[in-house]
Image 1 (cartoon, rainbow, N blue to C red):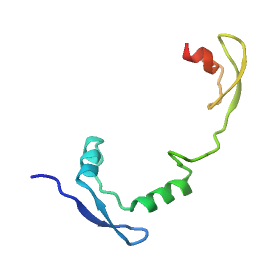
Image 2: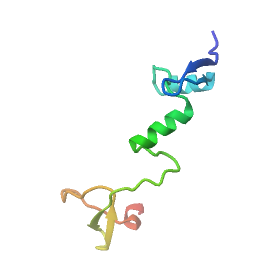
Image 3: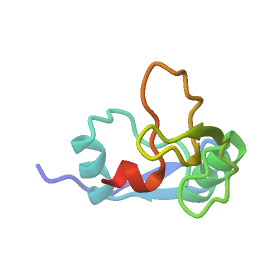
Image 4: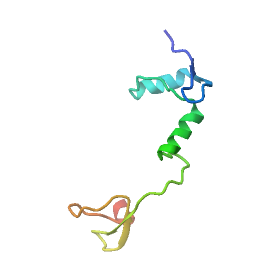
Length: 95
């Protein structure tokens, strides 16, 4: 039996949205077993309030100072260096 589009009512705003057959296939390939509960605008609003931003968000990311283990240059990294592993600047990391 072929998968067909489904109409779902958004749990936040109450509007009806379509869960397309293509979206259902995508969910299946990712191992997601539950259907979406929110329409696209409500999902996007929920992500922003949780700080998930995703694409297009200009979310602030905490950066930490570090010294590159290869070239000795001062740099910043998006994690707090613990000292037990080497940290590299962007250029050395790409090499």
